[in-house]
Length: 286
Length: 157
Image 1 (spheres, rainbow over the protein chains, first blue to last red):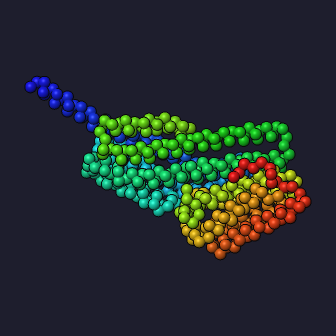
Image 2 (cartoon, each protein chain N blue to C red):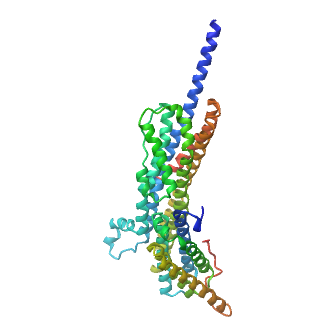
Image 3 (cartoon, chains in turn green, cyan):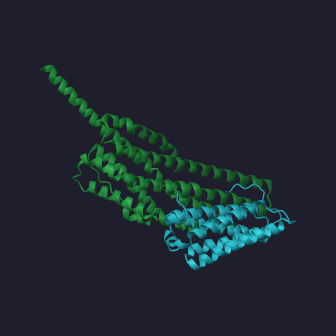
């Protein structure tokens, strides 16, 4: 009798441990995704930042020495139509990122405590210039977050809800990848690098290059090109994070209901570990 | 990423931005690598390249998707004209013709941002005409003309 009780107790403990593993694996993946997504803010903001740096370099150097170091030069560069266009969509793009970040934080919190007060920002996302399907996906994630934050959410529905939101998560992540890969790395940073180089060439052409001037300009150019390389590296690490989060979420959505709770850890931990190792590379942008 | 008429306005904006950026870089490379340009030609090519780069930035920000929605019927024509201009700038030998293509391309880019379909059509035709004239001019020049920037190393694609 004593031995049977021990077996029942041990089995109950094992089942409890398995349930904790499930919550723990999902919670860790959610919180690591949240941390990785939070690193994306400086990347998105640097679309405008890169444009401003580019147009700052392009400005004609004033003849009056007192005007050379005029702080208004920054405002003038920021007012360039291209930089103003980046500034116009930036709050919307950040709202998309924030909604996705809050979604993963909510998943982490729900897996741990069963509650979350995170919110989406579908309204602000409308100013991102993104296509209708992206805005609809952000809206769907916001609705899910609103439902959870309203209270009374039953954690037993989480597996089903993650499956329902998987398509929206993928659409939002693809949109963010497009912004960072095509518009930032593939376009704006290329433009900045090219214009900086051309501006220095023009300066040397117009001044008649003394070796000292040429050497100083070359040193300045090297520094700026190195900085751009680091920004590109940080952005590429962020893209890898986004791809990892998308794949991890999809695995969770498709396999959580069918595999044993103990196996979920083996499924999710590689994504969690991968995110952890990528985050320091994005932080170099700060 | 889908391109042309089947793409979303946002994807079209990104594609046009990319094309205008490459055109701007190609124009700068002609400016850098062509010997004996006049001061006017250097200035004109530099100004056009810079403006094309700025318009590329505006398209890249995706804030102009509404404008692109208005000009859907012309989108394939615009993309083709821009591609033709980019290719021609990289191969045309006579610098006057490169300047003409660059200037016509800037008119097209400016017209896109203004969003008037009639002006865009006219500007796209202007690019087509400048490219055609340049190719004919090079063919005639091939019978004894002066070598230009073509054949020099180009990194833009």
